[in-house]
Length: 551
Image (cartoon, rainbow, N blue to C red):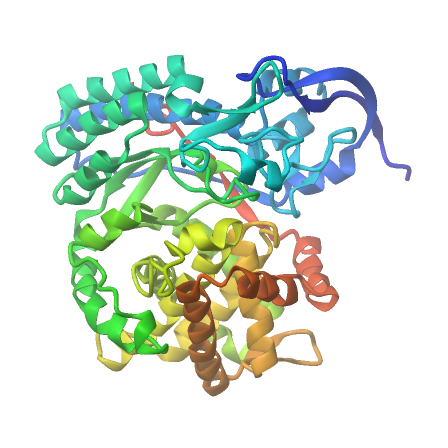
């Protein structure tokens, strides 16, 4: 049967040099062919999950706050659209197919985030490495020669003036109307907040949107201990900027703390200094002391927006990213247990039934998945934040490669932490649970594509483990974990990553990514097997005030 073909109109996208505040604008329209069957397969990569939580334990004022915080969070969608692509409405107005529109909205643009950021609408060019943070025609050398103190700021766009010269535009000026509205909504929430720590944070965050000075509110966020309602909102992660890795994207999570689960997790942070001393690397790379004010808590997330809602969805958070705050206060690790449960039930378990040796499937448990994910976030606080050879911070020295290596570090040191705490009797189960679940999770995460920081990290680990014999592949196509060899591979990879970070070795990281950050043909066949079995790659959400049954 012949495939149905639809004619679509779409724009060839270019940056405008005549107005430095614009995103991409269409110069001409072209006829595009779009296949219904392929787009249906694209949508099948995602499974829908309803974001709900038990609100019975909230006070009336907390229930009144939620719609206000959700409204503020929703504005992050528009800001991230601009950062990722440009003009959303102009793009969507040229697409008539409903499935294509839906997939564009999932990806915040016409590039498939789970498939190497490849364009899925014909006539759209490859995604610029710098997204919409920089002029499309700007070279790295031109940027290096550009003399502006704030050019590498997390919170500036780089544009051209009327003469074609590079200039910077602060976020709070680019988004003047939107950030004023966000600030007003956060101040409105302050009036309802009953927790003093939350009041202070919301007030400082409201100010930060107007001046791009987010550090005071980051410190205030770290000081919050007893609040039940929480919101993570602002320009935060730098994954979208794959040119330099220095521009932060807007996102938001609206959260409800599970106080009982959080009490169970709180004591783990006390082990951080001890675990830091034990990481398998030379002493010079572990002299920094992780902050002791770190929190480890469990939450239900009731709203995602912006960067965190694009493509693969975050199921745990480790913030702030500010190295100064981390060294003075540590970080807060937020485990999003309702979203985590969705990925385990709907994705991880089905993957194991196709790719894990039948004798080892019994070791795949939600408790192990939760612990591995949790300690991934905790492990961001271990290791090193500043190079040992005066090359500045790890993030600045490794540029656009920093995120991928940091995610790889957190994954492997997270498993190290599980192993050490298991030996101390602090966590239950069988160590085989954690290692088998960890291996299965590589298959889950690598399906995000090697273009993302998490995807690169997973491919490096998969190929490193393969090289070290940490697993073998059976004749029937399933994989079997070799537990002793995985333990050694874990130590070796930890040492390699921490050394590269501490040395600020950009060339060494680039070589590692080039050699091991790719999906092999054999592995791709295994991943295709999962797609052919209609196992989703990730989740999308039904969310918002109506889902929570709030007025």
